[in-house]
Length: 210
Image (cartoon, rainbow, N blue to C red; front, side, top):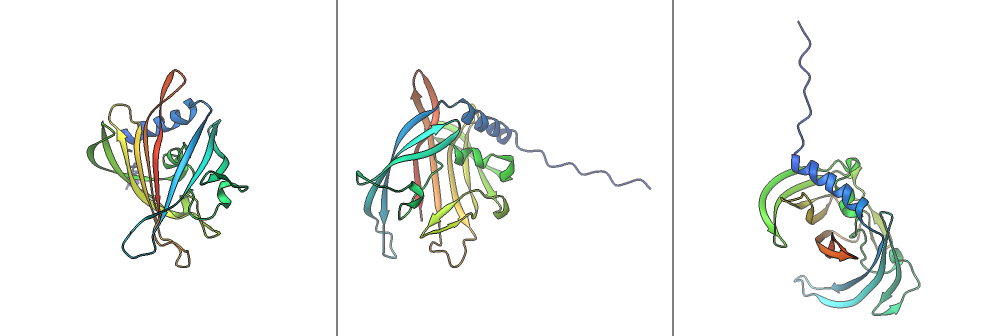
């Protein structure tokens, strides 16, 4: 008797393939630039989320050769002599390129499932859910002096016209029982921004909920 036929790998969704190519082109085509990032931080100490403004954290984000760095950190416009990672409370980074690049990186092994068509920022888009297992997660979260890289799931909206990513939502999963936070969510929205004579699709707003 002959050997059983080999099973082929399931074919990847064509739009995900194009989105991966677009994400790679996104980081390669961006010029070096500096942008001012302003983050209003809120807190609540009640069961019902009654958010109160705590402070405004600002920084210059330097995007250079595909990497982000942060300088001139200020809280309520007062200089802070610490790197962003050492500032107390909740901080985030990765909005300006690395979140997008990592989600579609082959090393992340994200599993995508097509859901439905919708509109984001006026553009027709296809929504996909995704999951990233713990061994392949590169999402780094710091809080209370503790750093973790959790498994996560979420959704991504991909433009029908050019396969550009318009929105990413992420939720951490399987957080350690002794970690100070029991829920972490992250949203990044992208829009058209002019740099010099050209238009680029860049992050325009992000929200981090812990």
